[in-house]
Image 1 (cartoon, rainbow, N blue to C red):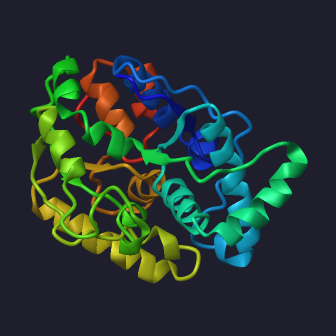
Image 2: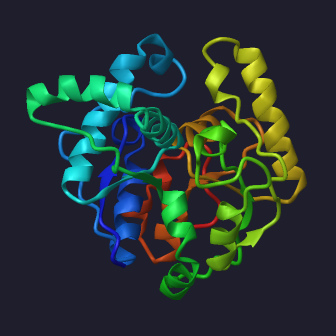
Length: 276
């Protein structure tokens, strides 16, 4: 593939979920995607709490990293819904010449300038464009997987944010899983929330949301929840009662491409996998 990216790992994956990173690196290498780490990466300024506290700091932080990728002729590739949304919304906001000018005035102090051409893509989006490629790369039989896709909120909302996936009836995850030979047993007509975003505010409500969605997946006959979001991954893996194992998109790809347990990191899952 000719795409050139900088991989943006975010905060949660390298600190708590290293198996998602190792799986992503394995899959990207197999797909021939050039994606070294983004130089000088920092927190994206996540899109729920921090962003609304200081818009100028958020835009400056995102613009610096977008400028780095832009100057090197690369896009930013994320493995996280929250990072993806933060970058996309910042990029949209920086289309305003006044905001971009204010940001560039600060960036000039470190020799950087953002011209508005920097782009960001989610792993979901990139893989979804190459279904024939991933199908040809598959070396492991996945017919035992009965998958319930869970796209997650920040990959589909807000609908005005120019996200790659549509805000209703998303199909990218389902199409990817099907292309790899898995059985998709649940389709997202209206994308569900995992409840993770309010866990620190109201644990009871958060658990209720989680239980509702996992019960619907269980009733569909799923033995695997598939998500492109590390926060949803953590919520399903650590807090659900239904006991359905969860897999990040990067792990599904690496698993299909023949990665071993040391890459996939099944042993780190709290809800133990059943498809080894």
